[in-house]
Image (cartoon, rainbow, N blue to C red; front, side, top):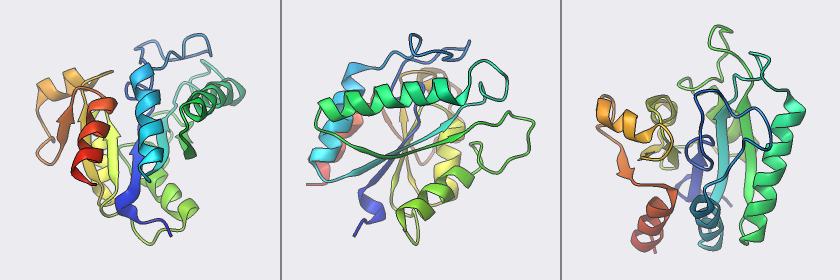
Length: 185
């Protein structure tokens, strides 16, 4: 049975792959951080369950469609599997910031979807890893422990300094995974 303490929720853009202010609109623009792919593999080997929660407002804005997003996620899953890892579920919010949905981070709706999908009674004690304050706010709203990575928008988020009181900060996903596996064994 899965325990929340063994659940790692990852933001996608800026944590797993390079981010862009112009959005990641195609498979060619989706460029993973090799160290993040390897880190997900190590998490799986260490007995953690990995899921992804990602805002994808580019769909609502008409920059790309759900088939294009699925091609990016298919590539992600294949790369992680090559590393011996597994991503259990990828949740995404296709809505724009003005759509008044409950799933767009910083709101926790997407995380509740993950909780329900995995059959957990609570997400308290799981880990939310992101590069923006809204990632951490969504996780903290459901009891996740917060991790800010400096990749993507993380360095800018860290420089602002607000809302990071509870967050552990690491250079990238690989450094967090090194720390987690070392301290939690």
